[in-house]
Image (cartoon, rainbow, N blue to C red; front, side, top):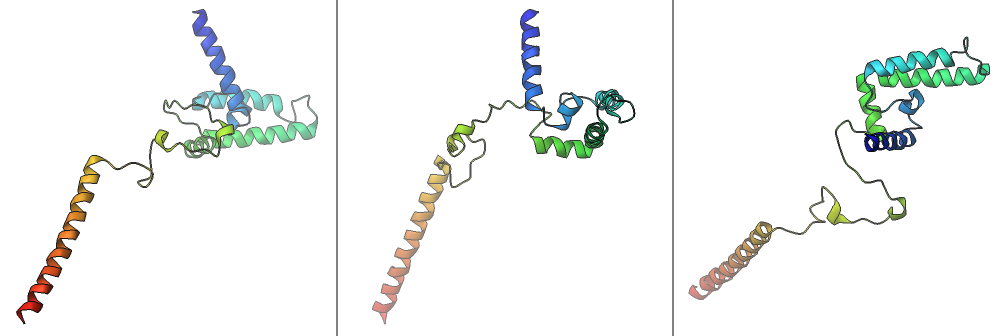
Amino acid sequence: MNSDYNRKTQYTTITKEYFADTHYGLLKLHPSASVMEIRRAYRELSKFYHPDTTDLPPEEAKQKFQRLNEAYGVLANPETRLKYDLQIGYSRWNVIQSPYDFSRANEYDSSKASYLDPSDRPLSAGELFALLLMGLTIFGCMILAFCLAWWRTSNI
């Protein structure tokens, strides 16, 4: 039980740090939150940040309330939410990715890519065999053409 709690707390901490500057962070939600959770969080925070009901300075309250409205507008609509999720790099499907290492930004290891450009990957045995057959066919056609040309010139 305790290890499960620690894992959940660690996950929540990492998630909060990662999504802190997003609309989800503004609403204090995880990106997998339901529409009802988004609406509930928006209502609670809008009461707190509304310029008429907050203790914050009017300009700051107005700015935060506008950001809150923008976040809710994006996340309440499923289409804009999907686009936004793609923009921030969040996937609703369980995808395990290692954190990006910025110190190795210029290095590219093509062997670890899930999709390799055809020019970046080694040829399979079947592809090598097909290339061999094509090469032999071209070579055979050239030999046949020279033989036919020689035979026709010798018969004239």
